[in-house]
Image 1: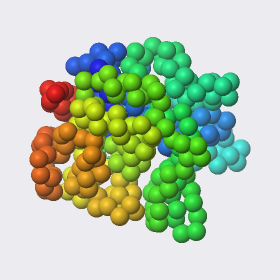
Image 2: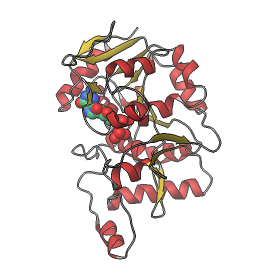
Image 3: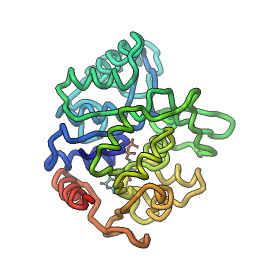
Image 4: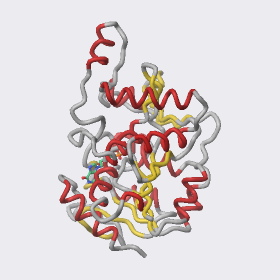
Length: 298
Ligand code: GDP
């Protein structure tokens, strides 16, 4: 069993490659849920959805969110009706979010709801929310505090970040399923996901750090030089007082990792790191990187 800790882009790209060498039933993904949001009556769980669509073979890999060839009739109509649905939710994607919302409203935990949706999509990989408790990444910009989705999707990451806040009224703690998956894994791979918004929320779940300390853990850097391969990770690192590079990322994960992987092009020196081509510009590159990582199994 191989377990990945994942957000919604960098790690799913790596998992796409790993599927060439592993049966889906041998893959567990512990997924960030700090970007989840109730919107237009459905429950959006963006990173979980990316994994569900990846494993069910219908992810839009042009954007790494949503269902390929989805239509946006309901979204367009909602905008006409004056609803500020600032995230472009596709029609079929929306159906999944409504189904999840109904399951949650009927009393299911997010873990149960994800298992039921996985079954309905014929998925044999274990897609596990990091926690069943509510967690949200919020951004303080000036005197306003907004949801991370609003910062990144509505405002396209254009607002200054004064603080990154993790809001969780009751927790969060890792689920029993997450902890036992880590315990029974041959290897845990922290993919090249955004440290501040995708991986730290997972690491902040109670119980995760001790479980990872006992496991064989490899992390892949999402940075090359002082910039991420894509997305807002640099601004978020700076807001946490960290330089946006592999050195800071390795330091963040220091207590839990056995190996740190950075790109062959990265000018930043992280002593002891393994150098690989981590640029996953297509399925072949993802597969090569995955194969190299899987061969490091301790
Ligand atoms: P999000 O949930 O959509 O923010 O996605 P993740 O957190 O899973 O991934 C975002 C991170 O993936 C960004 O910081 C990127 O730098 C990183 N990333 C995307 N593609 C690649 C790639 O091909 N190689 C590497 N090393 N990092 C990548």
